[in-house]
Length: 523
Picture 1 (cartoon, helix red, strand yellow):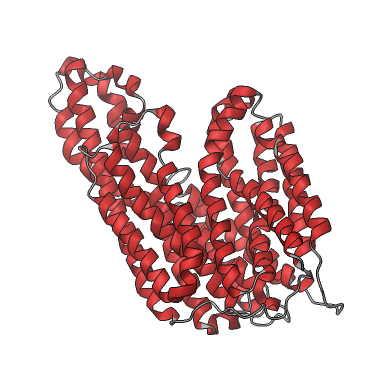
Picture 2 (tube, rainbow, N blue to C red):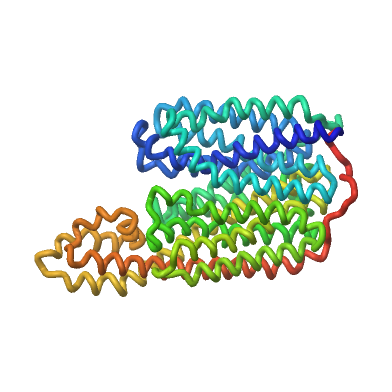
């Protein structure tokens, strides 16, 4: 393959991955406008949830299919589904339609990401692969920065529908590039498809994620709805394990876990997802509720962290060639642990500049870890299994992130309930009897979901029902309670990251090989 054609393929892959990553965040800024036109405020979160559910469920399936039938056709199919979903989202006439169409879009996005990373593994030998995966890792960081901003620009300049329509010309361009530039060598033998494994892993993933997303929100954790969802999901996963042990071409071959690098790398990315992607959800809440960043700037508070992640991801792809998997994973997890510890020290007196510097330390670690995991598993297996092992890392990271959001959300709720009970109730007891009815709504929040009281920090107008003499003490108490609650969240995240660093010790001292790609499937 000429370097010119390889560069053209890389351009097509980057464009596809950028579109897929952007659509996880770009709709967030446009949601107020979308709700204003379509209604359905109570279903707002499902616009994002539908995309996440569909993309996570399809990841392990498409990785195996790409190994069986080639990368090119599944990448192009993923792009076609993504483009179709985008067009339908732009045409949606109700919130229900938009949620369904976002699910279709998520299926396409979930197919694009792992297949694109697998193609990168096919295109480059070990040394170059490490550098390129670092660059592709930076694409995700760039998307997280551009997504909310682009959503706002598009809504202001045109219509929210163009948030989705913009994917059509760019997606078609990427598909045309890949159609003509990428060629494959695929065996002509008939291969069996693990239908039971595919259905059971998709059903199990969706049921468990639905249970975790709705637990403590739509239904109580011990309710029959949540127990049924999570229990049904676990049952489907057990069925999946049974099916994989008997299938001729399993979606996720269980013998992969006999490989130490595969097992350790996926354990690390799972623990990183638990701690990292769970905790970073709460950073904007700290910046706006405690530091006092305005709502208009809240969408940009993650930019410094993501910029540091982009830089370290690019640098990490080159550093990996010199120090090997174990050293880089431990270094990256060390930076993340340091960032988490620093963030756990933040309080009501923390300035925006200090908080930003702590977030950047965390971003440095994240950028070192993410490409290392992908490179490690790709180099541990031949090209014939590269699709399934690449998709496995993405799948475990996604599952870890969802679990992390749920676990750390519960940690915050419980800690907030304790703190607000100790601080707020005594404060309310000092209110004159004639003003007590004004506080009834806040006492109801305290009994049902104490965390909702932190909304008073994000919407000061809600404090109008609080006696004027008490507003400043209430705000100060809420800021202190929020800071202390997040202090606990970051400490739990720190423990999970440290556990990941310990697990990384067992990956071995292997390094990226400069050898050519074995069993290459791209020409």
